[in-house]
Image (cartoon, rainbow, N blue to C red; front, side, top):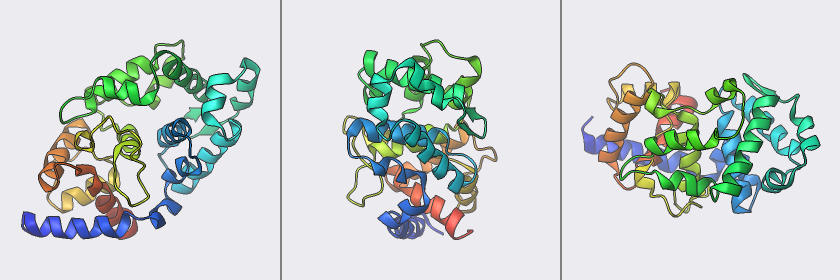
Length: 254
């Protein structure tokens, strides 16, 4: 397949999957329950953080998280009393437990009270064509508060050679702007051209079959390689191709 043919093929798949039907089986449905900017951000952030494993379980546990915060995530983060955190103690999704959840609530409060919110923190360290250094710096700010060491593993660091799939997915949700009704595009200060594809087993395998990726591991080096290839196809909106790679891998068994 020539690059031109590949672009036509992938553009068609983006059109096929980048529509509201996609939301029904995807964790992005959780932030779609809200209309306030901060609620969307926090719901998106928390549900993306636990987005590994069975998709049904991710969605159910994300809804559980919202229920535990009275379905007003921003209000809960900013105004909760210490005793209200006790009800989060029994939460568990894979290795993310109640103590991790409580630490995340406190860290998010710290970010909104002392750093002007999630968007401002990610904006601060964005580079011309990458958000990976920004993710690294975000992790440092997020864990400025007291926390258990184990909780740190739930936010990946691209500078430790992680593909940081979940944070890249969250950024895609917040930043990508189109009128299709899936991604939100509520962070106008960050350009979609700086985003990286959420790289996982499915998208990685499809990318290799299509010749977009040669590296065998799904790590930061692979992500840089995939980024480079996707930017050739669309420099302004490279991560729209996540819809194509994901759809081909998950729905079509490509």
